[in-house]
Structure formats: structure tokens, C-alpha cells
Length: 292
Image (cartoon, rainbow, N blue to C red; front, top):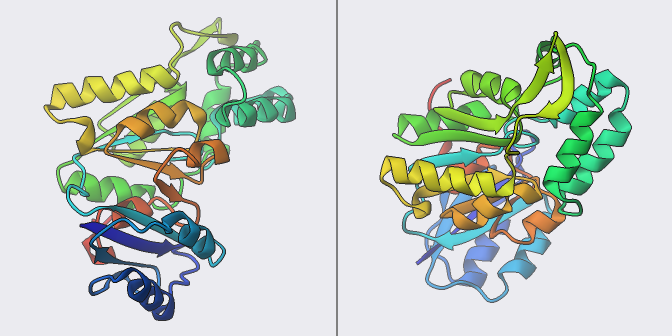
């Protein structure tokens, strides 16, 4: 048995009964369940449709995300999340680079690295070097003035944790940011790279080894072993090439507003919904969301 989930942007819900009904009929689906009126709904089918990705492409044009996944085991026991452009709307290193006057140059490198065009470790080393000499207090300034949470994040964390899930934030960014975001959102732990400073100024280096793609996979393996669960119990979410290892290993790997090369490798692709989409694909209805 498979479950089909249709969802839209919460700020502009555009899921119509007509679209839902047409897909139910075409795929021989069971009764529909509205998870949030006009925003998200689901129904069950007996087999995976051959034209799933063709239909996905069609409804994308209507502002609708489509997910088809096995019905059993959808509710996960662990959330493993990337931070930059996933739990927050920005890339922290790009914001630091703006303060250093090299924003455009660094932003281009970041985009190419996240799309898998550049080696992650090398790209990080090059970008961090350009931050040399910045006052280390710039981190607090950027956190206060430039960083905003991705919509739906508080509801996602609160709801999954209310149902007993463990939450880990793993980032190729920096601990100075992950620690703050983890505390704000309620993550149980966080892992990231450490920006080095000396005499109150950034040295333009990070502590080794660099936390990249493999370190995120290692985090998934370490934490699941410690909790006594398996990768199948994990919902992982990210947007960049360095997230692909954990996204493909997790029971549910969600490409959220992801780079094209990343989305192409994932069965769950969210381009219109926000982080509450991760609740809908697990079968939570809006009325089940924890109060925040």
C-alpha cells in the first residue's frame, strides 16, 4: 500500500477538491483525507503509479507538491536536519561574507558547492579564508540582524518531539550558528564546523576535520545506533549536495527547496510547501500540530 500526499504553500493554499478527485480517479485511490483544508490531503493506492513523475511535473506547475511513498512506517522516530537554507532561510557563510565585503563572490561559490559542482571541503576552506580578520563579534551581529527561521520549523520540531522523536541538527556551517538555532528550535543536539578565532578576530580557518557529506552520514549512523533505532526510522531534510548521503540513507529523505541535482536524487521533493510539509508527509493533520 502507498500513500499519496498533495500539499501546497500554507500562505497560498491552492489544493482544490477537483485536482484531488481527478488524481484519486486516475490512480484508483481510496477515500481522501484532508490534512488541512485547501493546503494538504492524502489518499491510499495499491501500487506505485508508472507515471508518478509525469504527474509530479504537471502539478508542480499548479503550485502543488506530490509525494508517493509506502504507507507503513511514515511517522519517524528521528529528525536529522541540515541548517542553512533548510532550518534557516540563509547561508550563514554568505551572510558573514557580506560583512567582510566579499558577499557576491562567496555566494557564487556556495551555490556551486551546494549544487555539487565543487568539492565541499575545498570550497569551504576557500570561503572561510576570506573571512580572516573579521571581529568574532560579527557572528552575534549576523545572528541578530541577518538570520531568519524557515517557515514551519517551530511546528515541525514541536510536533515531532511531542510524539517522542529525537532531533539532531547537522550542518556544514558553523557551531556558533547551529548552537543558537538548535536552542531556539529545540533540537536535542547539533554538529557543525568550528570557526577559529584568535585575539578577538577570525583566523580564516576552521577546526579539522571538516564536517561535510560523510560526516552527516556518520551522524545518522552514530545517533541511530545510540538510540537503538535504524536509518529507516529517520526523516532527513536538506537542500545541498553535501546532504545527499544522509538523504539517501534515511528512511525518508526530503529535498526541501533543493538544488536541482539534489532533488533529482530524492523521492520526496518539496518545492512549494514549508517545513510543515514534513509533518504532512508523515500523516499528521494540521489539528495534530503541537501548540507553539
